Image (cartoon, rainbow, N blue to C red; front, top):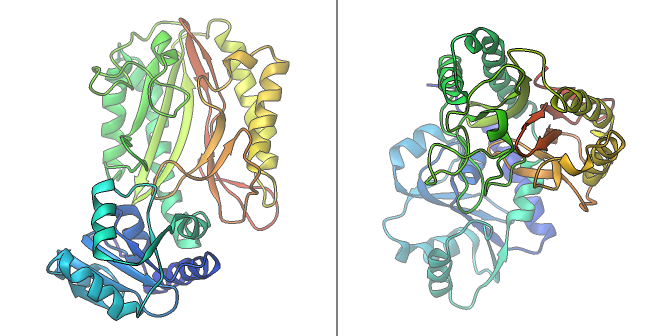
Length: 384
């Protein structure tokens, strides 16, 4: 088994979350979503984690209690036989509470209404702003997991040139690269927060299919294997001079890393060749902005400025209005390097920056690296 999350790491996270609860005027939080449970406990079970704004958290486990106690360093891990026992257990852990925090961004409506009936007279609040403030500042332990995941991507990208000689379609190449990733230690499952959120290993897209928009909040879509999925490769032909965008996600011990490289079996046709050079220029231009104190929107605004100067403003980032996103336990974490967002980067943020240019009927090109924002100096490229 992979080593568990160290006890001091869990303690640091709980402390940071509790400080956020105090700042937001929330007496306690009730955590049920898998990524949040893993972040705060080191294990994922069918359970409720009760985190008071001050005091010791209690992990109330419906199943599996033995695994929870074996995998989590928390001191108080107790059984929860029924949701009828939840309110008394919360009050035993926290005393009387006026405001209870819930993960309102993902909590199902049916579960929320059950809590309304269970906690009569309690006001509910969104605890995610406090939790995101903690989760978005990665520790050295977390960054080490992300560095390990990046080695999977390095192995996959290194394998592409040889595989292109034997793969006729983007789907063929995707299948081969998934094998490379799993062989390099990829965990398989990846998390994407929100309703209908799912992500697999990323996407390999060739030719015009790369420019087909999809419902997902991503610059590249693709038709996918069927309308049931609606994105990713469907077996687009890899043609000489056409672009093959390889946008992959590495995953190790729950932590993700994101990178894109563009390949071709012959010199790229225009405008793809010029567009790829512009994508590289955008990335080089944006990198110095990935420092603490710079606004989230600055990277997007600067990238759009470079694209427009090159005549590619209409192609910039396809149908989305961001150039980067945070990564960690999920693919779509804060910070979001998007239009109009004036919050500032902080040391410990890990962001994937992905300038892409999309040309309907022709194809798409792009590059992407994942960076660590450091306390001072330039960012560290985790996917060099």
